[in-house]
Length: 206
Image (tube, rainbow, N blue to C red):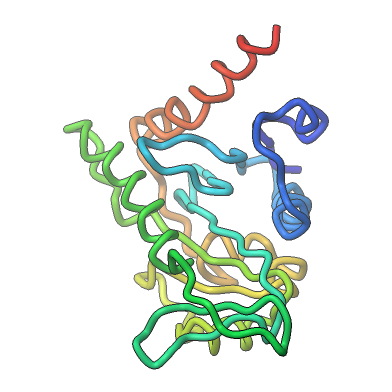
């Protein structure tokens, strides 16, 4: 079982509530083996990914989860994302794109690494967008993102069944990922930044 921070048993006291899609995602991530560390809503500069998964052999993955229902979102002609509350409602523009949000989360991690001269493992940082209510094919079609098992494809899109079937594939980027040792400096930097918010939160509720 993956190491979850804060622990799942402590989430009732966490300052940020998780919606249904995020809880489903966390349950799947918890099934990763104990070489994985998963941080819930860590603060990384101005960014706060839903989750960050870290592994010494497979790198770092920022995870953006959207609790979207099938048919309630689309990409408009101008490229913006739109949503509607019901099938009869008018389409309204969304303030952000999940792809852009995930990319910002990855960039925040890269900024942490680039601040340390001895850390140069930017290639091991990935990000994913997960739509648990969609299949992977539906999610890729909606977000216009090709489904590719390419080690250099740092942004991927997944549906809920893929997360249930193989969470390690989702966070590592490939069903048969190649082990690439991540430097201890890189791991320490990200762990320190991800745990900082937990330490501050724990102090606040004592």
